[in-house]
Length: 573
Image (cartoon, rainbow, N blue to C red; front, side, top):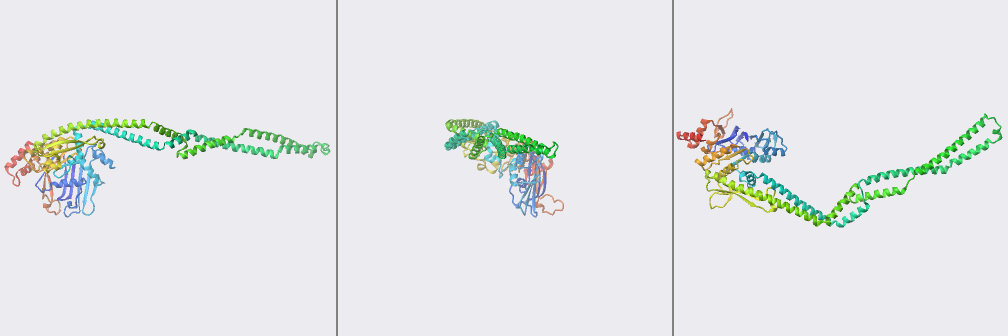
Protein backbone atom coordinates (compact mmCIF):
# COMPACT_ATOMS: atom_id res chain seq x y z
CA UNK A 1 0.00 0.00 0.00
CA UNK A 2 0.93 3.68 -0.34
CA UNK A 3 2.04 4.82 3.11
CA UNK A 4 3.36 8.32 2.38
CA UNK A 5 3.25 10.96 -0.34
CA UNK A 6 5.36 14.12 -0.32
CA UNK A 7 4.98 16.84 -2.94
CA UNK A 8 7.12 19.92 -3.48
CA UNK A 9 6.35 22.70 -5.98
CA UNK A 10 4.10 20.57 -8.17
CA UNK A 11 1.42 22.63 -10.01
CA UNK A 12 -0.46 24.38 -7.18
CA UNK A 13 1.12 22.44 -4.32
CA UNK A 14 4.04 24.16 -2.63
CA UNK A 15 4.64 21.79 0.29
CA UNK A 16 2.52 18.74 1.09
CA UNK A 17 3.35 15.71 3.26
CA UNK A 18 0.71 13.02 3.62
CA UNK A 19 0.72 9.88 5.74
CA UNK A 20 -1.81 7.42 4.38
CA UNK A 21 -3.75 4.80 6.28
CA UNK A 22 -5.34 1.50 5.37
CA UNK A 23 -9.07 1.41 4.71
CA UNK A 24 -11.20 3.86 2.75
CA UNK A 25 -10.12 7.50 2.39
CA UNK A 26 -12.34 10.07 0.66
CA UNK A 27 -10.86 13.20 -0.93
CA UNK A 28 -13.37 16.03 -1.17
CA UNK A 29 -13.31 19.71 -1.99
CA UNK A 30 -14.71 22.28 -4.35
CA UNK A 31 -14.21 21.95 -8.09
CA UNK A 32 -10.82 23.31 -9.09
CA UNK A 33 -9.33 22.98 -5.63
CA UNK A 34 -6.71 20.58 -6.93
CA UNK A 35 -7.93 17.06 -6.18
CA UNK A 36 -6.61 15.82 -9.53
CA UNK A 37 -3.17 17.20 -8.67
CA UNK A 38 -2.66 14.34 -6.22
CA UNK A 39 -3.34 11.81 -8.95
CA UNK A 40 -1.07 13.66 -11.36
CA UNK A 41 1.71 13.82 -8.76
CA UNK A 42 1.41 10.11 -7.94
CA UNK A 43 1.37 9.28 -11.64
CA UNK A 44 4.51 11.36 -12.15
CA UNK A 45 6.24 9.51 -9.30
CA UNK A 46 5.33 6.22 -11.01
CA UNK A 47 6.93 7.15 -14.30
CA UNK A 48 4.19 9.01 -16.18
CA UNK A 49 5.42 11.52 -18.73
CA UNK A 50 4.78 15.03 -17.36
CA UNK A 51 5.42 18.37 -19.01
CA UNK A 52 7.45 21.12 -17.39
CA UNK A 53 4.22 23.08 -16.94
CA UNK A 54 3.68 20.96 -13.82
CA UNK A 55 6.51 22.83 -12.08
CA UNK A 56 5.05 25.49 -9.80
CA UNK A 57 5.41 29.03 -11.09
CA UNK A 58 8.66 30.63 -10.01
CA UNK A 59 10.36 27.32 -9.14
CA UNK A 60 13.18 25.50 -10.89
CA UNK A 61 11.99 21.98 -10.15
CA UNK A 62 9.20 19.85 -8.71
CA UNK A 63 9.69 16.76 -6.55
CA UNK A 64 7.32 13.95 -5.64
CA UNK A 65 8.21 11.17 -3.19
CA UNK A 66 5.92 8.13 -2.92
CA UNK A 67 6.57 5.46 -0.30
CA UNK A 68 5.08 1.97 -0.62
CA UNK A 69 5.16 -0.97 1.76
CA UNK A 70 4.23 -4.11 -0.27
CA UNK A 71 4.31 -7.57 1.36
CA UNK A 72 7.47 -9.66 1.18
CA UNK A 73 6.02 -11.91 -1.54
CA UNK A 74 4.62 -9.09 -3.68
CA UNK A 75 5.43 -9.34 -7.43
CA UNK A 76 6.96 -5.86 -7.42
CA UNK A 77 9.83 -7.15 -5.28
CA UNK A 78 10.50 -9.89 -7.83
CA UNK A 79 10.44 -7.24 -10.58
CA UNK A 80 13.05 -5.20 -8.72
CA UNK A 81 15.18 -8.32 -8.18
CA UNK A 82 15.08 -9.03 -11.93
CA UNK A 83 16.35 -5.50 -12.48
CA UNK A 84 19.26 -6.00 -10.04
CA UNK A 85 17.70 -3.93 -7.26
CA UNK A 86 17.93 -5.88 -4.03
CA UNK A 87 15.77 -4.91 -1.04
CA UNK A 88 15.10 -6.58 2.27
CA UNK A 89 11.69 -8.28 2.43
CA UNK A 90 10.46 -5.76 5.01
CA UNK A 91 12.10 -2.73 3.40
CA UNK A 92 9.80 0.00 2.14
CA UNK A 93 10.03 1.16 -1.48
CA UNK A 94 10.75 4.90 -1.65
CA UNK A 95 10.37 6.44 -5.11
CA UNK A 96 11.66 9.98 -5.61
CA UNK A 97 11.21 11.70 -8.96
CA UNK A 98 12.33 15.21 -9.85
CA UNK A 99 11.02 17.30 -12.73
CA UNK A 100 13.49 20.02 -13.71
CA UNK A 101 12.80 23.14 -15.72
CA UNK A 102 16.19 22.80 -17.36
CA UNK A 103 17.15 19.21 -18.06
CA UNK A 104 15.51 15.80 -18.05
CA UNK A 105 13.51 14.33 -15.18
CA UNK A 106 15.40 12.14 -12.73
CA UNK A 107 14.14 9.20 -10.71
CA UNK A 108 15.50 7.33 -7.70
CA UNK A 109 14.36 4.18 -5.91
CA UNK A 110 15.71 4.01 -2.37
CA UNK A 111 18.32 6.57 -3.48
CA UNK A 112 19.47 4.42 -6.44
CA UNK A 113 18.88 5.98 -9.89
CA UNK A 114 16.24 4.14 -11.97
CA UNK A 115 14.53 4.62 -15.32
CA UNK A 116 11.00 5.89 -15.92
CA UNK A 117 10.37 2.62 -17.79
CA UNK A 118 10.99 0.60 -14.63
CA UNK A 119 8.70 2.89 -12.64
CA UNK A 120 5.97 2.38 -15.24
CA UNK A 121 6.42 -1.39 -14.94
CA UNK A 122 5.99 -1.06 -11.18
CA UNK A 123 2.96 1.20 -11.48
CA UNK A 124 0.31 -1.42 -12.31
CA UNK A 125 1.67 -3.68 -9.58
CA UNK A 126 1.31 -1.00 -6.92
CA UNK A 127 -1.65 1.20 -7.86
CA UNK A 128 -4.88 0.78 -9.83
CA UNK A 129 -6.61 3.98 -10.94
CA UNK A 130 -10.27 3.77 -11.89
CA UNK A 131 -11.83 6.84 -13.39
CA UNK A 132 -13.38 8.48 -16.41
CA UNK A 133 -10.06 9.10 -18.12
CA UNK A 134 -7.71 6.59 -16.47
CA UNK A 135 -6.85 3.30 -18.09
CA UNK A 136 -6.64 0.20 -15.90
CA UNK A 137 -6.50 -3.56 -16.11
CA UNK A 138 -10.28 -4.02 -16.14
CA UNK A 139 -10.44 -2.19 -19.47
CA UNK A 140 -7.36 -3.90 -20.90
CA UNK A 141 -8.49 -6.90 -22.96
CA UNK A 142 -5.08 -8.51 -22.56
CA UNK A 143 -5.75 -8.72 -18.81
CA UNK A 144 -9.21 -10.27 -19.04
CA UNK A 145 -7.92 -13.82 -19.31
CA UNK A 146 -5.90 -13.42 -16.11
CA UNK A 147 -8.83 -11.86 -14.26
CA UNK A 148 -11.24 -14.61 -15.33
CA UNK A 149 -8.79 -17.41 -14.46
CA UNK A 150 -8.20 -15.88 -11.06
CA UNK A 151 -11.94 -15.57 -10.47
CA UNK A 152 -12.44 -19.17 -11.65
CA UNK A 153 -9.60 -20.41 -9.42
CA UNK A 154 -8.40 -22.42 -12.39
CA UNK A 155 -4.77 -22.80 -11.28
CA UNK A 156 -4.91 -26.60 -11.50
CA UNK A 157 -6.43 -26.57 -14.99
CA UNK A 158 -4.00 -23.86 -16.11
CA UNK A 159 -1.04 -25.85 -14.83
CA UNK A 160 -2.27 -29.01 -16.55
CA UNK A 161 -2.79 -27.10 -19.78
CA UNK A 162 0.66 -25.56 -19.56
CA UNK A 163 2.28 -28.95 -18.96
CA UNK A 164 0.35 -30.45 -21.87
CA UNK A 165 1.42 -27.55 -24.06
CA UNK A 166 5.06 -28.08 -23.11
CA UNK A 167 4.69 -31.79 -23.86
CA UNK A 168 3.15 -31.08 -27.24
CA UNK A 169 5.84 -28.53 -28.12
CA UNK A 170 8.52 -31.05 -27.10
CA UNK A 171 6.90 -33.72 -29.28
CA UNK A 172 6.73 -31.33 -32.24
CA UNK A 173 10.39 -30.46 -31.81
CA UNK A 174 11.20 -34.15 -31.49
CA UNK A 175 9.43 -34.96 -34.75
CA UNK A 176 11.16 -32.06 -36.51
CA UNK A 177 14.51 -33.23 -35.18
CA UNK A 178 13.93 -36.75 -36.53
CA UNK A 179 12.91 -35.35 -39.92
CA UNK A 180 15.94 -33.08 -40.08
CA UNK A 181 18.27 -35.84 -38.97
CA UNK A 182 16.86 -38.28 -41.52
CA UNK A 183 17.04 -35.67 -44.27
CA UNK A 184 20.70 -35.06 -43.55
CA UNK A 185 21.39 -38.77 -43.23
CA UNK A 186 19.73 -39.59 -46.56
CA UNK A 187 21.84 -36.94 -48.28
CA UNK A 188 25.01 -38.37 -46.71
CA UNK A 189 24.19 -42.07 -47.11
CA UNK A 190 26.91 -42.87 -49.66
CA UNK A 191 29.48 -41.01 -47.62
CA UNK A 192 28.37 -42.73 -44.41
CA UNK A 193 28.64 -46.18 -45.95
CA UNK A 194 32.16 -45.47 -47.25
CA UNK A 195 33.25 -43.98 -43.93
CA UNK A 196 31.91 -46.88 -41.86
CA UNK A 197 33.61 -49.40 -44.19
CA UNK A 198 36.88 -47.48 -43.91
CA UNK A 199 36.70 -47.28 -40.14
CA UNK A 200 35.71 -50.94 -39.87
CA UNK A 201 38.90 -51.85 -41.74
CA UNK A 202 40.90 -49.59 -39.46
CA UNK A 203 38.98 -50.86 -36.41
CA UNK A 204 40.11 -48.13 -33.99
CA UNK A 205 39.92 -48.60 -30.24
CA UNK A 206 39.85 -46.00 -27.51
CA UNK A 207 43.28 -45.55 -25.95
CA UNK A 208 45.03 -47.39 -28.81
CA UNK A 209 46.91 -44.34 -30.09
CA UNK A 210 48.47 -43.67 -26.70
CA UNK A 211 49.57 -47.29 -26.38
CA UNK A 212 51.04 -47.26 -29.89
CA UNK A 213 52.90 -44.03 -29.21
CA UNK A 214 54.42 -45.52 -26.05
CA UNK A 215 55.34 -48.73 -27.90
CA UNK A 216 56.96 -46.67 -30.66
CA UNK A 217 59.09 -44.80 -28.12
CA UNK A 218 60.23 -48.08 -26.57
CA UNK A 219 61.04 -49.65 -29.95
CA UNK A 220 62.94 -46.53 -31.05
CA UNK A 221 65.01 -46.70 -27.84
CA UNK A 222 65.67 -50.40 -28.39
CA UNK A 223 66.78 -49.62 -31.94
CA UNK A 224 69.30 -47.08 -30.70
CA UNK A 225 70.66 -49.52 -28.06
CA UNK A 226 71.06 -52.31 -30.63
CA UNK A 227 72.85 -49.93 -33.01
CA UNK A 228 75.33 -48.86 -30.31
CA UNK A 229 76.10 -52.48 -29.35
CA UNK A 230 76.56 -53.43 -32.99
CA UNK A 231 78.94 -50.51 -33.46
CA UNK A 232 80.96 -51.61 -30.40
CA UNK A 233 81.23 -55.15 -31.79
CA UNK A 234 82.33 -53.79 -35.18
CA UNK A 235 85.01 -51.70 -33.52
CA UNK A 236 86.31 -54.75 -31.65
CA UNK A 237 86.34 -56.77 -34.85
CA UNK A 238 88.05 -53.96 -36.72
CA UNK A 239 90.87 -53.39 -34.20
CA UNK A 240 91.23 -57.12 -33.24
CA UNK A 241 92.87 -56.41 -29.84
CA UNK A 242 93.28 -60.15 -29.09
CA UNK A 243 95.52 -60.67 -32.12
CA UNK A 244 97.62 -57.65 -31.23
CA UNK A 245 98.03 -58.76 -27.61
CA UNK A 246 98.83 -62.32 -28.67
CA UNK A 247 101.52 -61.13 -31.11
CA UNK A 248 103.02 -58.90 -28.46
CA UNK A 249 103.04 -61.77 -25.97
CA UNK A 250 104.84 -64.07 -28.40
CA UNK A 251 107.44 -61.35 -29.10
CA UNK A 252 108.17 -60.98 -25.36
CA UNK A 253 108.42 -64.80 -25.15
CA UNK A 254 111.18 -64.79 -27.74
CA UNK A 255 112.95 -62.07 -25.84
CA UNK A 256 112.74 -64.04 -22.58
CA UNK A 257 114.39 -67.09 -24.24
CA UNK A 258 117.50 -65.18 -25.26
CA UNK A 259 120.76 -66.05 -23.31
CA UNK A 260 121.17 -62.53 -22.00
CA UNK A 261 117.90 -62.91 -20.11
CA UNK A 262 118.08 -66.57 -19.36
CA UNK A 263 121.60 -66.31 -17.85
CA UNK A 264 120.95 -63.17 -15.82
CA UNK A 265 120.01 -63.36 -12.14
CA UNK A 266 116.29 -63.43 -11.31
CA UNK A 267 116.51 -60.02 -9.69
CA UNK A 268 118.17 -58.40 -12.61
CA UNK A 269 116.19 -55.26 -13.43
CA UNK A 270 115.70 -56.04 -17.15
CA UNK A 271 114.61 -59.61 -16.42
CA UNK A 272 112.15 -58.46 -13.76
CA UNK A 273 110.61 -55.81 -16.06
CA UNK A 274 110.41 -58.25 -18.97
CA UNK A 275 108.50 -60.86 -17.00
CA UNK A 276 106.23 -58.13 -15.52
CA UNK A 277 105.36 -56.93 -19.03
CA UNK A 278 104.74 -60.50 -20.15
CA UNK A 279 102.33 -61.05 -17.22
CA UNK A 280 100.46 -57.81 -18.04
CA UNK A 281 100.04 -58.85 -21.67
CA UNK A 282 98.72 -62.24 -20.60
CA UNK A 283 96.17 -60.63 -18.31
CA UNK A 284 95.15 -58.09 -20.99
CA UNK A 285 94.70 -60.91 -23.45
CA UNK A 286 92.37 -62.71 -21.06
CA UNK A 287 90.36 -59.48 -20.39
CA UNK A 288 90.10 -58.69 -24.09
CA UNK A 289 88.80 -62.15 -24.79
CA UNK A 290 86.19 -61.79 -22.01
CA UNK A 291 85.20 -58.26 -23.23
CA UNK A 292 84.63 -59.51 -26.74
CA UNK A 293 82.51 -62.39 -25.42
CA UNK A 294 80.44 -59.95 -23.28
CA UNK A 295 79.82 -57.60 -26.17
CA UNK A 296 78.82 -60.55 -28.34
CA UNK A 297 76.37 -61.74 -25.69
CA UNK A 298 75.01 -58.16 -25.39
CA UNK A 299 74.49 -58.04 -29.13
CA UNK A 300 72.43 -61.21 -28.94
CA UNK A 301 70.44 -59.89 -25.94
CA UNK A 302 69.57 -56.56 -27.63
CA UNK A 303 67.91 -58.25 -30.53
CA UNK A 304 65.81 -55.57 -32.34
CA UNK A 305 63.08 -56.29 -34.88
CA UNK A 306 62.74 -53.39 -37.41
CA UNK A 307 59.45 -54.86 -38.65
CA UNK A 308 57.80 -54.34 -35.24
CA UNK A 309 58.70 -50.62 -35.25
CA UNK A 310 57.54 -50.25 -38.83
CA UNK A 311 54.21 -51.93 -38.05
CA UNK A 312 53.69 -49.81 -34.96
CA UNK A 313 54.43 -46.58 -36.81
CA UNK A 314 52.26 -47.55 -39.77
CA UNK A 315 49.29 -48.24 -37.46
CA UNK A 316 49.80 -45.02 -35.47
CA UNK A 317 50.11 -42.89 -38.60
CA UNK A 318 46.98 -44.50 -40.06
CA UNK A 319 44.96 -43.68 -36.93
CA UNK A 320 46.19 -40.09 -36.89
CA UNK A 321 45.40 -39.64 -40.58
CA UNK A 322 41.86 -40.90 -40.03
CA UNK A 323 41.44 -38.54 -37.06
CA UNK A 324 42.48 -35.59 -39.21
CA UNK A 325 40.15 -36.72 -41.98
CA UNK A 326 37.12 -36.86 -39.68
CA UNK A 327 38.25 -33.83 -37.65
CA UNK A 328 38.20 -35.59 -34.29
CA UNK A 329 40.63 -36.77 -31.66
CA UNK A 330 42.09 -40.23 -32.35
CA UNK A 331 40.29 -41.67 -29.32
CA UNK A 332 36.96 -40.48 -30.76
CA UNK A 333 37.26 -42.48 -33.99
CA UNK A 334 35.43 -45.45 -32.51
CA UNK A 335 32.57 -43.17 -31.36
CA UNK A 336 32.43 -41.57 -34.81
CA UNK A 337 32.07 -44.99 -36.37
CA UNK A 338 29.31 -45.92 -33.90
CA UNK A 339 27.45 -42.66 -34.62
CA UNK A 340 27.68 -43.20 -38.37
CA UNK A 341 26.43 -46.74 -37.94
CA UNK A 342 23.47 -45.37 -35.97
CA UNK A 343 22.72 -42.86 -38.73
CA UNK A 344 22.79 -45.63 -41.30
CA UNK A 345 20.56 -47.70 -39.06
CA UNK A 346 18.13 -44.78 -38.80
CA UNK A 347 18.07 -44.56 -42.57
CA UNK A 348 17.30 -48.25 -42.77
CA UNK A 349 14.52 -47.85 -40.19
CA UNK A 350 13.54 -44.26 -41.01
CA UNK A 351 9.89 -45.05 -41.56
CA UNK A 352 9.62 -46.56 -38.09
CA UNK A 353 11.45 -43.70 -36.33
CA UNK A 354 9.44 -41.00 -38.06
CA UNK A 355 6.17 -42.84 -37.52
CA UNK A 356 6.97 -43.14 -33.82
CA UNK A 357 7.76 -39.41 -33.56
CA UNK A 358 4.56 -38.48 -35.39
CA UNK A 359 2.48 -40.73 -33.14
CA UNK A 360 4.01 -39.11 -30.07
CA UNK A 361 3.18 -35.69 -31.49
CA UNK A 362 -0.44 -36.63 -32.20
CA UNK A 363 -0.90 -38.05 -28.71
CA UNK A 364 0.65 -34.96 -27.13
CA UNK A 365 -1.63 -32.70 -29.17
CA UNK A 366 -4.68 -34.71 -28.05
CA UNK A 367 -3.56 -34.31 -24.44
CA UNK A 368 -3.24 -30.55 -24.91
CA UNK A 369 -6.64 -30.26 -26.59
CA UNK A 370 -8.19 -32.26 -23.74
CA UNK A 371 -6.55 -30.03 -21.12
CA UNK A 372 -7.59 -26.94 -23.09
CA UNK A 373 -11.22 -28.08 -23.19
CA UNK A 374 -11.24 -28.69 -19.45
CA UNK A 375 -9.83 -25.19 -18.91
CA UNK A 376 -12.37 -23.69 -21.31
CA UNK A 377 -15.22 -25.42 -19.48
CA UNK A 378 -13.98 -24.02 -16.17
CA UNK A 379 -13.73 -20.55 -17.69
CA UNK A 380 -17.15 -20.75 -19.29
CA UNK A 381 -18.80 -21.69 -16.00
CA UNK A 382 -16.89 -18.99 -14.14
CA UNK A 383 -17.82 -16.43 -16.83
CA UNK A 384 -21.51 -17.15 -16.28
CA UNK A 385 -21.09 -16.79 -12.51
CA UNK A 386 -19.16 -13.54 -12.93
CA UNK A 387 -21.83 -12.11 -15.27
CA UNK A 388 -24.58 -13.01 -12.79
CA UNK A 389 -22.64 -11.52 -9.89
CA UNK A 390 -21.99 -8.34 -11.81
CA UNK A 391 -25.66 -8.05 -12.76
CA UNK A 392 -26.54 -7.88 -9.08
CA UNK A 393 -23.96 -5.15 -8.54
CA UNK A 394 -25.09 -3.03 -11.48
CA UNK A 395 -28.70 -2.39 -10.42
CA UNK A 396 -27.86 -0.39 -7.27
CA UNK A 397 -25.40 1.63 -9.37
CA UNK A 398 -28.18 2.84 -11.71
CA UNK A 399 -27.04 0.50 -14.44
CA UNK A 400 -29.93 -1.94 -14.16
CA UNK A 401 -30.44 -2.01 -17.92
CA UNK A 402 -26.82 -2.78 -18.61
CA UNK A 403 -25.67 -6.30 -19.40
CA UNK A 404 -22.25 -7.89 -19.06
CA UNK A 405 -20.88 -11.02 -20.61
CA UNK A 406 -17.63 -12.93 -20.78
CA UNK A 407 -16.82 -13.93 -24.35
CA UNK A 408 -14.70 -17.03 -24.98
CA UNK A 409 -13.73 -17.24 -28.62
CA UNK A 410 -11.90 -20.42 -29.61
CA UNK A 411 -8.65 -19.80 -31.39
CA UNK A 412 -7.01 -22.11 -33.96
CA UNK A 413 -4.90 -24.83 -32.46
CA UNK A 414 -1.80 -23.47 -34.20
CA UNK A 415 -2.33 -20.12 -32.43
CA UNK A 416 -2.91 -21.67 -29.00
CA UNK A 417 -0.45 -21.48 -26.14
CA UNK A 418 0.21 -22.60 -22.59
CA UNK A 419 -2.82 -20.59 -21.42
CA UNK A 420 -5.23 -22.59 -23.55
CA UNK A 421 -7.26 -22.18 -26.71
CA UNK A 422 -9.49 -19.22 -25.73
CA UNK A 423 -9.48 -15.55 -26.56
CA UNK A 424 -11.25 -13.95 -23.60
CA UNK A 425 -12.84 -10.53 -23.48
CA UNK A 426 -15.33 -8.70 -21.28
CA UNK A 427 -18.18 -7.04 -23.19
CA UNK A 428 -21.14 -4.89 -22.16
CA UNK A 429 -24.20 -3.20 -23.55
CA UNK A 430 -25.87 -0.40 -21.67
CA UNK A 431 -29.30 -0.60 -23.31
CA UNK A 432 -31.45 -3.58 -24.34
CA UNK A 433 -31.28 -4.23 -28.06
CA UNK A 434 -27.92 -2.52 -28.47
CA UNK A 435 -24.83 -4.38 -29.60
CA UNK A 436 -22.34 -5.76 -27.11
CA UNK A 437 -18.92 -4.18 -27.25
CA UNK A 438 -15.82 -3.26 -25.30
CA UNK A 439 -16.60 -1.38 -22.09
CA UNK A 440 -14.65 1.77 -22.91
CA UNK A 441 -16.27 1.99 -26.35
CA UNK A 442 -19.88 1.43 -25.30
CA UNK A 443 -20.21 3.23 -21.97
CA UNK A 444 -19.86 6.88 -21.01
CA UNK A 445 -17.13 8.06 -18.66
CA UNK A 446 -19.32 7.83 -15.59
CA UNK A 447 -20.68 4.45 -16.62
CA UNK A 448 -17.17 3.14 -17.17
CA UNK A 449 -16.19 4.15 -13.65
CA UNK A 450 -19.25 2.49 -12.13
CA UNK A 451 -18.85 -0.61 -14.27
CA UNK A 452 -15.23 -0.86 -13.19
CA UNK A 453 -16.25 -0.47 -9.56
CA UNK A 454 -18.88 -3.21 -9.84
CA UNK A 455 -16.48 -5.50 -11.64
CA UNK A 456 -13.77 -4.79 -9.09
CA UNK A 457 -16.17 -5.70 -6.28
CA UNK A 458 -16.89 -9.04 -7.97
CA UNK A 459 -13.16 -9.59 -8.48
CA UNK A 460 -12.23 -8.20 -5.07
CA UNK A 461 -9.83 -11.04 -4.25
CA UNK A 462 -7.99 -10.60 -7.55
CA UNK A 463 -5.33 -8.13 -8.58
CA UNK A 464 -1.93 -7.34 -7.17
CA UNK A 465 -2.14 -3.61 -6.54
CA UNK A 466 -2.52 -2.80 -2.86
CA UNK A 467 -3.89 0.69 -3.56
CA UNK A 468 -7.09 1.39 -5.51
CA UNK A 469 -7.87 4.95 -6.53
CA UNK A 470 -11.33 5.94 -7.81
CA UNK A 471 -11.45 9.27 -9.59
CA UNK A 472 -15.03 10.60 -9.49
CA UNK A 473 -16.61 7.18 -9.93
CA UNK A 474 -19.84 8.81 -8.65
CA UNK A 475 -20.05 11.46 -11.38
CA UNK A 476 -23.60 12.09 -12.58
CA UNK A 477 -25.32 10.10 -9.81
CA UNK A 478 -26.63 10.84 -6.37
CA UNK A 479 -28.83 9.55 -3.60
CA UNK A 480 -29.10 5.79 -3.31
CA UNK A 481 -26.77 5.18 -6.27
CA UNK A 482 -24.03 7.26 -4.69
CA UNK A 483 -24.58 5.46 -1.38
CA UNK A 484 -24.26 2.13 -3.19
CA UNK A 485 -20.97 3.30 -4.71
CA UNK A 486 -19.70 4.29 -1.28
CA UNK A 487 -20.73 0.94 0.20
CA UNK A 488 -18.84 -0.92 -2.51
CA UNK A 489 -15.73 1.15 -2.00
CA UNK A 490 -15.94 0.47 1.72
CA UNK A 491 -16.30 -3.22 0.95
CA UNK A 492 -13.22 -3.15 -1.26
CA UNK A 493 -11.20 -1.37 1.44
CA UNK A 494 -11.47 -4.37 3.76
CA UNK A 495 -8.66 -6.01 1.82
CA UNK A 496 -7.06 -3.02 0.10
CA UNK A 497 -6.26 0.62 0.53
CA UNK A 498 -8.98 2.64 -1.27
CA UNK A 499 -8.73 6.33 -2.13
CA UNK A 500 -11.74 8.03 -3.73
CA UNK A 501 -11.90 11.53 -5.21
CA UNK A 502 -15.58 12.35 -4.86
CA UNK A 503 -18.18 15.10 -5.00
CA UNK A 504 -20.79 12.85 -3.44
CA UNK A 505 -21.62 13.31 0.26
CA UNK A 506 -23.02 9.77 0.33
CA UNK A 507 -19.66 8.35 -0.80
CA UNK A 508 -17.66 10.60 1.52
CA UNK A 509 -19.79 9.60 4.50
CA UNK A 510 -18.90 5.94 3.95
CA UNK A 511 -15.15 6.61 4.20
CA UNK A 512 -13.03 5.76 7.21
CA UNK A 513 -10.99 8.95 6.69
CA UNK A 514 -11.87 12.17 4.88
CA UNK A 515 -9.49 14.75 3.46
CA UNK A 516 -10.60 18.22 2.40
CA UNK A 517 -8.66 19.72 -0.49
CA UNK A 518 -8.76 23.48 -0.83
CA UNK A 519 -7.08 26.15 -2.87
CA UNK A 520 -5.97 29.20 -0.96
CA UNK A 521 -4.72 27.71 2.29
CA UNK A 522 -2.09 28.92 4.68
CA UNK A 523 1.07 30.96 4.26
CA UNK A 524 4.03 29.05 5.67
CA UNK A 525 7.20 30.52 7.20
CA UNK A 526 8.39 33.65 5.37
CA UNK A 527 7.64 32.52 1.84
CA UNK A 528 5.69 35.17 -0.03
CA UNK A 529 3.31 33.23 -2.27
CA UNK A 530 -0.13 34.24 -3.48
CA UNK A 531 -2.45 32.10 -1.37
CA UNK A 532 -4.92 31.76 -4.24
CA UNK A 533 -2.31 29.73 -6.07
CA UNK A 534 -1.70 27.14 -3.35
CA UNK A 535 -3.47 23.83 -2.73
CA UNK A 536 -3.70 22.48 0.81
CA UNK A 537 -5.11 19.30 2.35
CA UNK A 538 -6.70 18.99 5.77
CA UNK A 539 -7.41 15.68 7.50
CA UNK A 540 -10.88 16.24 8.92
CA UNK A 541 -11.92 15.46 12.45
CA UNK A 542 -15.50 14.44 13.29
CA UNK A 543 -16.96 17.97 13.56
CA UNK A 544 -15.05 19.26 10.53
CA UNK A 545 -16.17 16.25 8.57
CA UNK A 546 -19.82 16.92 9.32
CA UNK A 547 -19.39 20.51 8.14
CA UNK A 548 -17.68 19.37 4.92
CA UNK A 549 -20.43 16.85 4.12
CA UNK A 550 -23.04 19.52 4.90
CA UNK A 551 -21.27 21.84 2.46
CA UNK A 552 -21.34 19.09 -0.16
CA UNK A 553 -25.09 18.74 0.41
CA UNK A 554 -26.03 22.42 0.58
CA UNK A 555 -23.45 24.22 -1.54
CA UNK A 556 -22.11 27.66 -0.67
CA UNK A 557 -24.51 28.33 2.27
CA UNK A 558 -24.64 25.56 4.87
CA UNK A 559 -28.09 25.25 6.42
CA UNK A 560 -29.35 23.51 9.54
CA UNK A 561 -31.10 21.01 7.31
CA UNK A 562 -27.82 20.25 5.54
CA UNK A 563 -26.04 19.69 8.85
CA UNK A 564 -28.86 17.41 10.02
CA UNK A 565 -28.66 15.44 6.77
CA UNK A 566 -24.90 15.19 7.15
CA UNK A 567 -25.34 13.84 10.67
CA UNK A 568 -27.77 11.20 9.37
CA UNK A 569 -25.39 10.16 6.56
CA UNK A 570 -22.48 9.76 8.96
CA UNK A 571 -24.65 7.84 11.41
CA UNK A 572 -25.81 5.40 8.71
CA UNK A 573 -22.22 4.89 7.57
